[in-house]
Amino acid sequence: MKIKRIGIILIVLINIGCDQISKDIVRKKIAPSEYIQVVSDKFVLTNVENSGAMLGAGQNLPQPLKTILLQIVPIFILLILLFSILKKTSLNKWMLIAFAFVVGGGIGNLIDRVAYGSVTDFMYINLGIVKTGIFNMADVSVTLGGIFILLFSLRSRKALIGGQ
Image (cartoon, rainbow, N blue to C red; front, side, top):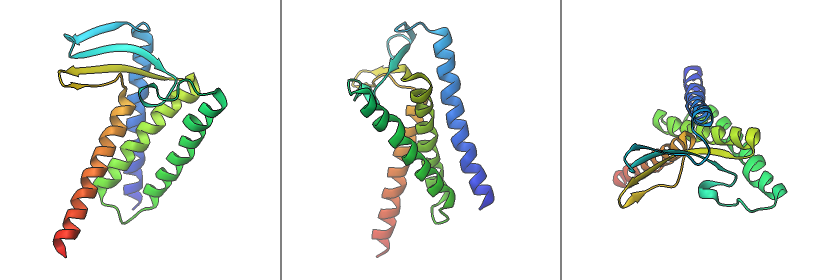
């Protein structure tokens, strides 16, 4: 179990590190609102500060409420989730990895909110019918973790239903 815990912590730290390093590079190398076409207009790098939640939700909330909803509550949720996955012995390793991605990404964005008052977003994808908002590596971690949690949950549920 100790090796599992070290693995979870490493995955969380790697996700935080990738997020924070990429954001630091963007802050230093890309001017605010600059628009760099990496693959024509299909993949674009930019530098946008998001003082709200996902896709800017809550940007106009009063500051005390924004601090509570976007900093204090997430700190408690992420700590509870991290301690839960460090203690859980019943989850399989793939589910633990998925939760570690969610925690790492959540902490990455939380670091920005506390340190800068906003989150640096910098990637945009436009594949015709598939268009994203502007996002960052922490968002990728949280999204991948969430997708894997959903898939593993559905697979486990299917196995339970099929086994009855």
